[in-house]
Length: 68
Image (cartoon, rainbow, N blue to C red; front, side, top):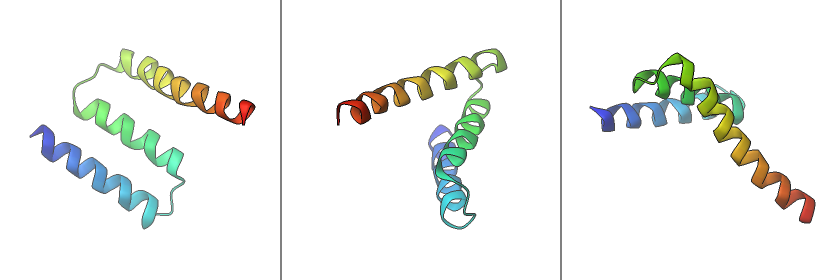
């Protein structure tokens, strides 16, 4: 069941970006929230998890941009 949910969420992500013309960052956030709810994450931990994930991603990207 988990594999099916992952496949459906990835397909939805591709549809949102490709056909729906949703900006990729917004689509990733929407699918991440959907996945968290789908897999039973509590509402209290979703915000912290997204913050940590986006912070880690943007932190590494900032270093690459600064140091060229």
